[in-house]
Length: 246
Length: 314
Image (cartoon, rainbow over all chains, first blue to last red; front, side, top):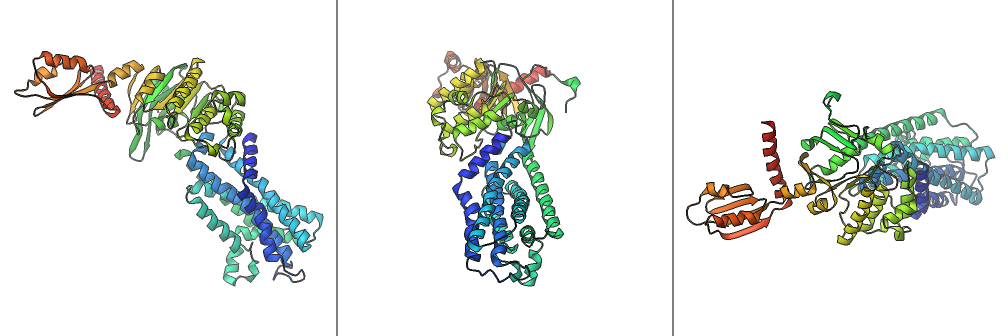
């Protein structure tokens, strides 16, 4: 299985478009949104200034991009092309394919988190304790597994033609409504209520709690674990269904 | 689900199907198929499109579960045989991983095989050493087939399964491909390939299984099948009274039909039939002698097979 993981990683690192959108793009968005903000104004209801707030949002967004896009589109396309069938004729266990995809996405998501942190620290002077930086990387990286599972589920649900629009709708929907692009504090109340239950909102909230020097809120941790279980369960079910079909 | 008491499979069988059926909705793709492959055979699975060839191979490889019946490969379930590295397969339109090079993909196949060959040897045997550094998504159709062949032969398999392997190859590529395949067979491997080319089955296989509508119609050497499918049609018009009895008594006929003045015959030896026709003192007009298409050849085999199974059961 290691050989497939290695090759999937090589391949992900070779894909310039994929690298741009998951590693460079979140930092560009960070600079566009928080670039001219002043450091003393707090984002309503958070106790963080815009730069610190958006740093976590964009790191989460980058990780989300890497794992969601990396899994869903590749899996749907390779299912359709017959590569998945070909792999089933090898000794590779069934879950090996999905694990290799997720591992390669995780390798790309790590730099996408770190690059946003470096850009935020250098250009906006975001300063945190060492444990906070490490905890942030750990929480955002681990939390991205939830969306990796969602990507796998979409990959097994959608056909090769439909996968891109479906992924885009889910991706932008979750990013914007979950408050990754703009703080959800600015949303009307009904929308804020919806947002607070989205996995992306809980995901960014993990990091924002760490920035304030706190442990993540129990509700956010429970939410993200629950979403992970639902997505992973759905992915496993769809995977098994697909296996019986062809 | 045949019980062990009724099984005819032998322990040495490479592959055995026992009354295996598989339907997609109302369509019976494989219908009560029973067959056995023996070590060292090169077997062609011959049939027109839609005969159930691909489904049969999917069942053999464990890619789909059978509705009823038992599929055994080396005495075990298909998946076990694959995990033990005993089966290599080349699927029809089996997609490849893109954005990686040919060499990287072949190295992956070798790494995943329990009894791998060296990647360089696999590349050279498949004739793709000179394109080893090329990206997989930049290959021609024929080159892709060679890469698929390399993936199917990355290790020391005992059985090689190929689904219409020469699709998209030109004549010379086809020859080269079968030469490589023969080397594999000469090393004692069992080779099973699906094809809808009678000539290909004839040239390569030492045993031919004819599949039609999911059922096994004929099982014999290529020469036997060719004789059965080699029927030609003889059509002509006759003036005056037609003596149907005499016509039906012509030698080598497999079918006869008289409508009005037109007579249509099928013969396994058209030369002898026409010779005897003149021998009757008849003067056929608009005489046409033509080979049967593969479809009609299958119908000819069906008819013969049904007649044979009737005499067998009576």
